[in-house]
Length: 483
Image (tube, rainbow, N blue to C red; front, top):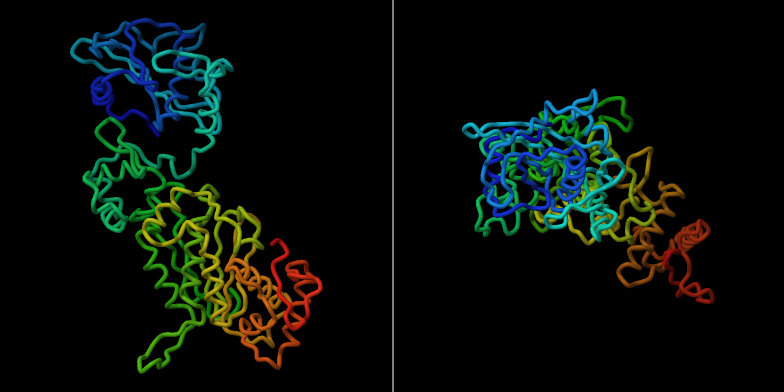
């Protein structure tokens, strides 16, 4: 996508800055191919270090006064051997970055502009040497204390920070996004003294491109787009919800692809899913209430986790919710960053930290990593079979189950229920016992021996261990094997 849309306005904006910066260099008419190559490397590396999408090298402007004096340099016409200068330059940069050339006139004074994008994964080198600007000084990157900072900056760059579309006007952004719905729900936005677009820039959802318009970042698109189908690469990332008539996938009752940004449609999506989860109405305390086969809080947490922790860079669909009469399955791209056995206790990790932070601001998730704990706790209170967490061929799959008695649960399910219960008890500062597991499974005192068998099977599987090896069976307490 182009870096320059309105070259005259860009030059006017840049010369209005109080001074040169490490990502902006003004020159008059000195052309030296080696020096320009070094500056391109330095400006690219300085741009990412200062959070800029690109930097600029401008000929025809005095660096002290920022006066437009014109230049005799003609970058498009310069030759190096049989090659054009720009082709020669491009082949000496690694990794390859976009270097865009434009020229313009202010009266009879010609100005030449190079816009230079920053690198990904590693610093940009010219002729195998990286460079950096330190104030106005050009230095080899290897001789600067900033080398590590540039490496860290390039490695931090994420999908969320990638520009999805450039040079959109305020009106175009209003038309393409539910921005007022989003900003209206963000904590602190209502008290911001800045305009709504200043707030979006401050929140790293859009960027002022210095040309009278804005560049839109992927984070904003997946959060608040009116129609994801209009954004190349993201057109299939909406949440797809499929409802089946039976327990297999042979007969689908409905198949609804999501088209809106997650942050502005999450509550509506959750309601849509819950309407299709098997449910019934009961009278409770004189009021008719809807009782779902699966707790809404569990569905909410699993759905939010799938959306937030998906791998946006993976090809194909976004999260998929499949609803069967006896279970609900949620699949998202990207294998989990932690073992599925440690979902309950391990600190939260995410591929999409900025997106997670935004969803937290909106109240759709917490950043404490407690979502799975809350879901499993709700499932235990409802005395349901334990959820199943799986890593399957580049995806994460979570399955929630409807009501089923202990007698029909498989040995694997009983072991999983015991292990998850031990994890929850340990995380709350308590210890699992036969009696706590009986309550979790909805069993009475007479079935203590059946629960003892489950505990023994879980110990044999290496998932739990007794607190003390010599403890009496009647008072035995158990903790996860990793504790």
